[in-house]
Length: 366
Image (tube, one colour):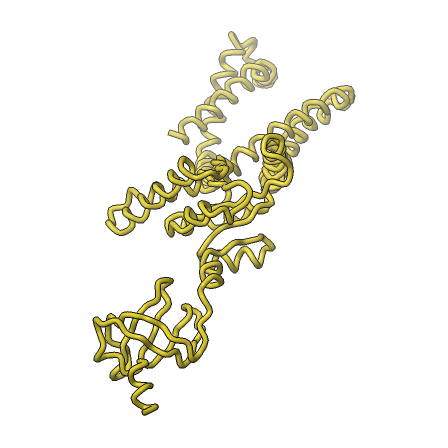
């Protein structure tokens, strides 16, 4: 179909050229071969020009179709924002070229005055497209910064200057502890929930996997609780970065633009924020910080619930989830037991406490 359109275009061009220049050529030929005046030279010239250019275009049309197909595939692969900004830049370039036509039209050189405007149009359109494509991020950042600046000024006008934005990520919402922290009043400022985080929660809640679906619904329930039951300011922003696909990268970008802090319990996101100079509040760090300090020699009242890895060991847990490994505690599984702390080990997974039953220590003392 595309090849037929190109050939039809060449046919029309040939007919137009033949209609305009055909009579002069036919008159010259008539004089050379002494046939006299040729009737309706315009239409004969148009017919001959159309046939001639149609035949000549049979090979170039294949080449042009290939170029158009490759250009089409390249454009389809580009993001919508790239195409949009490129098209805007091209339109601006054509407007600039049109403004340059006025001084160029005063040039008295016939060929130059006809070809130069066409050359400038193509050149300006190309440069406009390239500038719009390559400067897309800067243009978006400029308008986004202005918009967010206005939103922030509006929020500060109602809530007072100095409002701090705490941007929640998906993991900390699903975790659920953020609601309890907000309830205690330790989180100051406004809670910001981006719409792209809500979309990710919605996808998780609609998952076919039961565990994922339950986690997603739990996250939505937590957000509903924070927004309706707690006395904390909640802002749901529709700010998005279409050129960025990863949610974590969008959070970091949003925190930079809003000059806020990311609230998470994701170790990797924590490190990325630190590398890019974004303030981050890690719920796991807070939980570890508020765990009670246990020193060797202190007594604990625990319940041994299962075997340990080593022979004869028992395992118990404190209320905050800290694991207590009891030497010789296997025989006390299911029973409440008083133990004496022997050592404390801090690992990347958390804190581990090693202890011995108080009964055994008393027997050794006797």
